[in-house]
Image 1 (cartoon, rainbow, N blue to C red):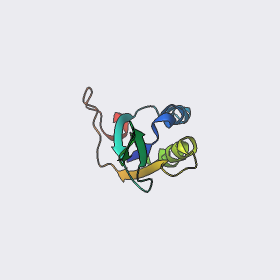
Image 2 (spheres, helix red, strand yellow; image 1 turned 180 degrees about the horizontal axis):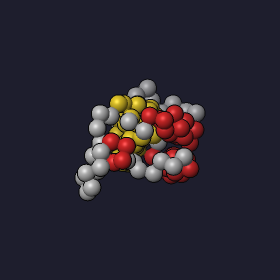
Image 3 (spheres, one colour; image 1 turned 90 degrees about the vertical axis):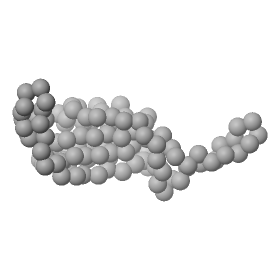
Length: 112
């Protein structure tokens, strides 16, 4: 099993969710986050004063999938999350040692 963590633009979430659902990947955790990378924020003006917004609003997806679903999930996120501009986000794939469904006690692949 693998944990896929994807940080994407908030307005791309619905497209990414739909693409993952088409691949049969339904379970995920979605969190509104703030962060910075190469994009480094932007300058805004409010009542004549300039200020720098250096932590930008992003959406973080966490999805646990079986090994054979990783490439399909990553491809779906990249395809639907990409705008072609700096700040589109990142995807991380991390090994998962164990998963347990609390309600039934099912473990590993059965818990997904």
